View 1 (cartoon, rainbow, N blue to C red):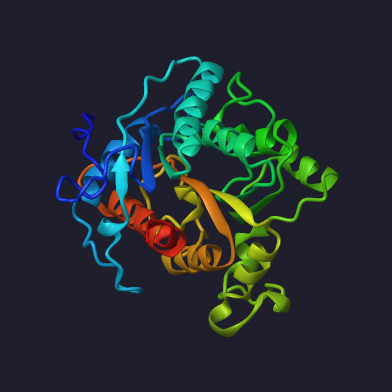
View 2 (cartoon, rainbow, N blue to C red):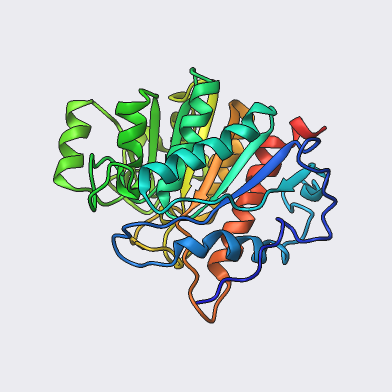
Length: 306
């Protein structure tokens, strides 16, 4: 499949303040290596950016025009094929943006694209924590011959970077990951525990609209946060265009409510959206991914652009 031509987020009608004056920078990272199931995430950034041209600029919840938030989209960097070299290149690209004290949204690409930006953010903010939205824990030490694979992202965060992390939306797991979760006393927010339709969910996670779990998620995070959003964290009825769709995921409204609370209660330094894989003949997945990006802008970063 031929990807669409590169376009800035929101299209050419969005006033671009330039790379130095921007408050929010979008960084496309078209990288995919060793896919576990469906392929196509390499072109995800181009499809998301193309879909963003169709978004209305006015956010319906806040009535904020995200087009006024001083957005700039950089061109994709050259990424080597070798996984560790690619991670280093992505870290360097993210670091250049963070050094200018801008907020960063990286868009992938498979989930391995998160490793470099998280490392770049942690080098500049050692007190940062990571919030992961995902169907999978991504805690394998090695997968498809690499420690820098999409299935190893959070293992690198946990062991190599030593960062606190909170995982949300998990609903599939390997024996290796189960053992590590037990050994490290990790407490993921499993999808079945936060599903309002699940009669067995813990009662202490209930609140009006069944969103008390969001308060618990954010309470576990330090003040500074990096958000890594693997789109398979959403239920495939919401976003089917991803490499490893897993039933029973978050709804769109749950994800937006979490983003909203995160922006209100914590300081989001950087984020990524990854694992978009276009389905020919439909635009729902890339449009939903672009809409989520706009929600991050509005709920988490509108104050820095004022």
